[in-house]
Length: 96
Image (tube, rainbow, N blue to C red; front, side, top):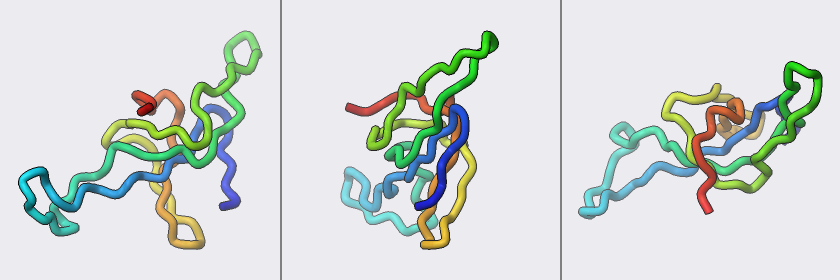
């Protein structure tokens, strides 16, 4: 992947949506909800504050994160990989 996010943006690869419910019902592709969990695959340098200083990113490559349902911009790489580019502020939590 030759994509590097700028500023306070991160690139997230969404985790696969659940295919079977807890009750054992198999969901077709059209019934699956858009996933809200993903893995950070690239991070920018950070946010430039009003005083001109660079605030370092809290997220790092490899973090498993929760984000908003409609957060970010979806892109597809030349290899067919689907990714999301979003601001660090759009990420709600890091899953440990």
